[in-house]
Image: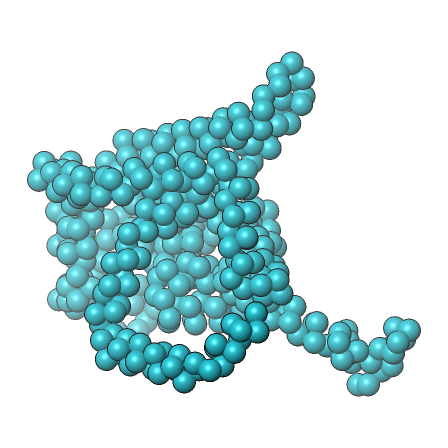
Length: 405
């Protein structure tokens, strides 16, 4: 061991020179190095996709596995092994996912395509109706503002509404050219997709074993103290992301169903399109409902202006019911951060990572909040300080409190 240390000490200068040469090479050839690194990481693309699939599928699979275990204990006549119960839970999870995809693609997608096609064919008429609707209410509120049809048309043009609708129609239509392009796209990524799928099955069926292997690797690389801290952070992150994803998906699905049913009952236009928008924007905290409201108001005013006010009233009531009753019951307070930090997280992560940052802002902000709070509490405890209510205390060796402020 001493000889090894002596060798390192004697050759420190050589090591520094080699490191400097390698570092300089990376800096001066950064684009080439990043390109090679990107290609190397791309080789593991199926594994990354599999990890995402396994992480999401593990949420319902865990519930199914617990349910099957309780059912077996209740019946008492069967004695399936843990591996068999795990296999059954995985099968139920993916069959349920397949059923959802089939229902969505055979029922919802054609209706969305029909709505988009109707909007594209009647866009001029909708622009005229929307112009008349805005001017009508401007008169009722005794304002001097009037909007022209060309201004509304320019607004649609600047927002590239026609281009967006054409793209969406291309996704949802059954046109043969579109189908062929989709087939070519799917064919080019089929191997990656099928490999990722089977990898996710292996990850789910032996998740405890793979987690233990990963922990061994982390312990080997980082050592005991750093590894324990990383494990604690990982457990905290897993809690927040599991709670957020499971609760948010269920809440978004319920909100979509409520929106669709209400729009069908009151015969509002484009129920499938607006309900789908409600599902998508439900994943954006605080602002998602507002985006859906704006889309619904514009489409209703353009297609059926007489129902615009009724739509606004009913949607606001529906949103209040969702926010004050359904959301707290489903998502609960598992994330546990105030609206101030939610807004701050949306601003920061949205600015850094765009739409993906907005989607992940709440669990990431909650995780950072929990880690910072834990760090501060530990530091204060070591300094024998405690903040409670409106007072600051100092603790002695017998945990007696002395008011400092």
